[in-house]
Length: 381
Image (cartoon, rainbow, N blue to C red; front, side, top):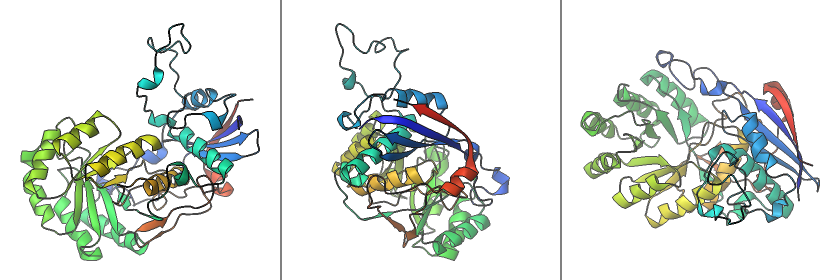
């Protein structure tokens, strides 16, 4: 099976107003950054879908797809497809040197190629007639826990958004925050409208700064009773501060990372209770296996994406043993559409794992046309 051409739709799907940040924190801007929807045709008539992360350029997509021209996709090492352009790399520019070096001994994790990985998995799954989670080793679960997501909000806005999220079927929320925010009051407001069982993940993006500054607030935050964990409270180059906070026993501590040395060091130090993994599917599976051995429940992170990447994340969650925590992978309640026909509905805090071949989702043409800003074709045969 070989690629013939890929139709690329550059899309911008806006958010619904009032669902990300309160006015005093400024408007959300991530939804203004384009994504590229990939729609591939193969020489066997199979159509595959992919979706890039935000901000991936046309040149990056063309480079990744161009390296698959003429390649039998059933013979590719899907764990590490040859997508990167190393032509400007002094060590690896010559792909077939007289004295070859072992390129596969190096780690070239590149999240910008996430969309092409999704495309390849969708095509292979459709070729074999199996869902993507089968390609990843099989599903440990047929429903994947998911949480709602919001940015920095006032207590009143947080309560409003979480009340609506609970009605939509969510059982928790991940919220962006900083030490300067009204975090305790925010948790109290959500608890009062959703109850203590509606758990909150406070993702500081390293903006709780230092343990000495954060500990007083965290003690008051924990006393509210609805805190699931705090994520990335401090800079990730201070994993000893993560460990210090964990040793206090105030709140569970989560680290957002990928399959890398930081993750392994966090395991060695015992720096976290949970781990949020965002990486290419193979790397998430590998890191998830290490997390399982280390006794660390995990979840899958995202970039508030559209339906194709959401579906891929659901398959990865299903096939990763340690992913028992709710994943923040759903943007459909924030964006005006997720561009797929099956909305992957949330019920009782979870979504059913697609069972159709490949990713198990299809494009919804009407909103795709509405939100497409331009199109280009990559011809490969």
